[in-house]
Image (tube, rainbow, N blue to C red; front, top):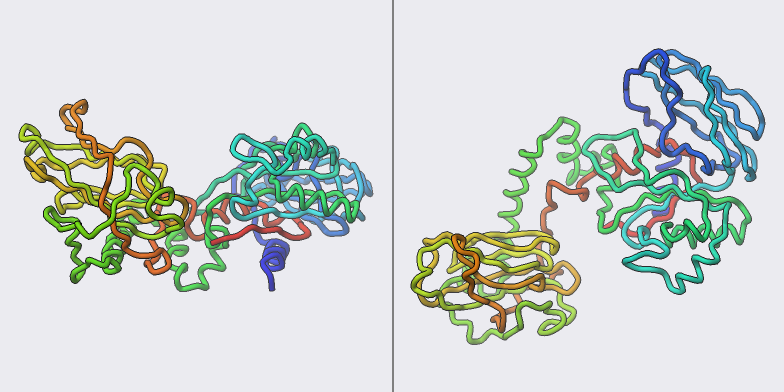
Length: 453
């Protein structure tokens, strides 16, 4: 069964979510979730779910204009209500009135086909924007006059707990040359082609996030059936703290760093002689630093590379605390000064600046050693000046730019998997909890998906 069918069934059949148990005053008005707004699209020829909040025990009457039938539901003790309403064959525009004694109305509603558009960056990429546009973007935008295509854009959020309140970037948007630029490009072209063939209105729920993992989009209930994810999900349910997560991660990271060392061609029973002062690197090759290695010494290489630089420290600097400034590194690094680790950092977006204790700083020749892991992209040190400065006097510096010695340690395919950070979205169930769970009751036709690593 392909992923489209899996997601379609999962989103259609898992209609079990209820809204949070929030107390309301006796005069509370009907409150609708963010997925119900003007311009929305509802699934045709279905018993669609409508839900919301109101005062405890209060009755809400829902009247859709396509049949003018009155549907009445009473809120439970927590103020939540939910009801199924029959929809006709595609068409519109229609209105729906929600009345608990004070009516609110949603307008310009279409009945058609609703699709969830999810996954990674290729689904997230918009039609036209500052950081990228589709081919012939100006022409595509100018011709995007399709008012029967509608888009709801979900915010990128995550949580260790299931959420019921959807966070969105505004309301349902009608497709036009003025609005289409911000649509998911894949979703828009899918909807346009679908409409041209079927002449049926299309609703797109755009819930996607570049660089995210499949397990982050998967429900905790499903992940608990998998031994590799069950402990983490159960921890969320039991209220595990961030401090506990950080401690666990640091332990896993230390184990991973040690495992990287075993792949090193110069490793000696887990020890790394190349990080030490006095190591003979005459057989190593040279590469320019700063500079991405795929643009110089190592085109098309992903994996770990060991780099060394020897430099002279003046006698006046001996014994003084220093800052080792390496700039940005793509993607992960561990740095040593005269054989002692002084820091490690993940992700290319962070500038590296490691404190070197004065006890490591000797007059004369000193050695900086850096292991870089590139998971993809250009790889290496190319995020700013590379130098050493005095902590007490930052204006005093020694430039480390130039030729560095290097050796290839291991290809990416041969390396152990790096543990995931405990402070981001790429953890089991976290994106599902905020970007899927709140719409799990929304009746859809199916889903289109781009990648989940």
